[in-house]
Image (cartoon, rainbow, N blue to C red; front, top):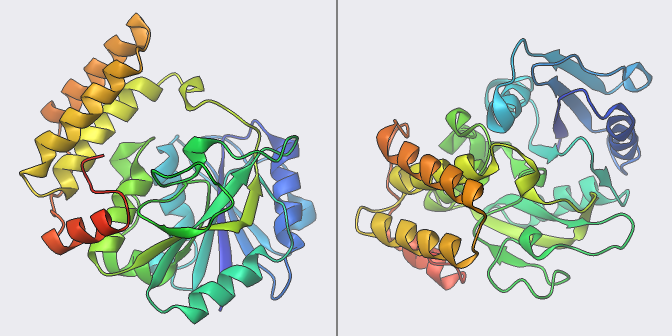
Length: 293
């Protein structure tokens, strides 16, 4: 199976980007072709990897999903020039040389497997943050399992999934775009695996470091529900997340930004609405995460 990789960059981490590309170049098996997308900024010098790396420079920042969608299309319509696409953060690093081969084997062995979420580990401590294990029972990050979503900067997607259900939602810009794609893929009959043996080293960070975090998280949570959930579940899902947000006792400015985003999610277009089937709701429930949590 042919493997490609998409990396988006703001151009501000040239050393980390080169280290990532070096780790991709060292993958076992056939070479992995990489597209690096400069998301509103020039791509740092990566000429040393010119044999397997192409670059695309965008005149403006399209956000994470928009930038990744450009990278997908660089591999042909819906990424059709390859069978598998890796999506990797530009400050990450593939810890092992067998990740691409493990992806090939996993997708070849299971025709219904559509997406693989990698384990993210801190390069200094080896620890995996709880939020980086995409399931409710996240205490043991070393346990691989079926899951209902995936990590945006450390994953592999079968390109047939993208061709069938579409790419990431451009308008989200940042936050929850992976879950939107995951729910559409699950509704189409695909499965998602979390694999502890496929590792991306990435420094431990807090998502709230992004200035737009609280507004985008709230707005996109509403859009996610409005786009994908059966109507009776929309208020339940959003009510649960409202209570969880209040229980976490964010600061005054953070809460104000969150409520601003929550309102924006209701008053602006969420894009096309395609509610998932009730049998998909049951599948999510059986997988341990009913779409109200």
